[in-house]
Amino acid sequence: MGNHKRGAMLHKPADIPSDSLPLREISPAAFERFFEFALDLCVVATFSGLFLRCNQAWKTVLGWGPEELRNMTASDLEHPAEAGFVMEMGSKAVLARDGQGVSYERAMRHKDGSFRRIAWRLVADQKQRLFYGIGRPTPG
Image (cartoon, rainbow, N blue to C red):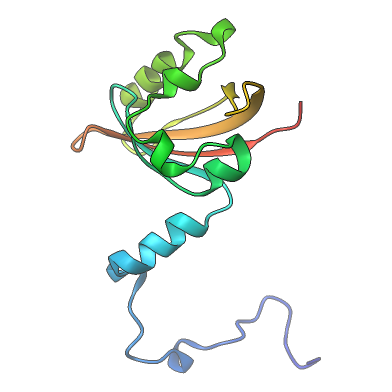
């Protein structure tokens, strides 16, 4: 245990089996598991804000299951005082340099009617015309 130098790799590249898949070749099933087990809110939405995919974390954080969210929009969960904010952030993400995205925080409606603050990172895919977002609850 005490033989490792600080910052030294525990496994040399030669220790990695040759049949290991590089990350760029990850299977759709493996990505599916990653998406579903993420603790943060994960979403794929159209440029008009329509939710296409949401992970299970939505149920834990906001009370909405993935199936309930399908075909809802980000605006459906918007706090009335922040009306239009989602579309503004989406526009900024579209205008951001490819892959740069935007970060913001906003209140989102829980299924019980209360609101929770969520910090978001949103990236636009111009070719697919999709948004990819990751959100995390914030205190307050």
